Amino acid sequence: MLALAVQSLMAFNLVCSGTSVVLTAKHSRSPEFRIDGDRGLRPMRAVYAIDLTSGRYCVDKCTETSPLAAVTYGEIVLEDKADRFGGGTTYRSVNRESGAYSAYFNTKSRRKLKRVMIVGTCKAGPFSGFPKRVF
Image (cartoon, rainbow, N blue to C red; front, side, top):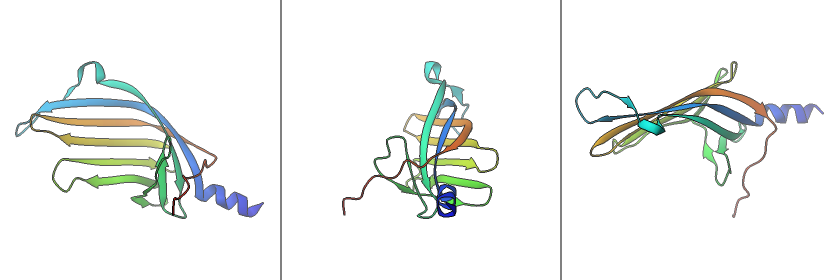
């Protein structure tokens, strides 16, 4: 019984919901971001399967796993990446005490800058598992 309780603390799903805001701007030294028309505000829902022991997670259909960026007492950082070619950044995290979810994605193209910001909350659920390995 104790082993099952410990396992549920180390492997679990997070069901997250919130709102995403899509902002765009034309390239300039000081771009002015504006809400991107009909795509500006949208509801967001994602299910993350997380295994703290292996340091991996997957999202929604869970076709492949990714490494967790960082785990601390108060926060799980799912992703913290910068495109090495300067094309964009990605950051996703969950506060372990409040369940607050935050994420942002920045991308650049020749004509536009795009920023997606997401805020929401996550609730823990039973671990759904990872995909089976081929080898």
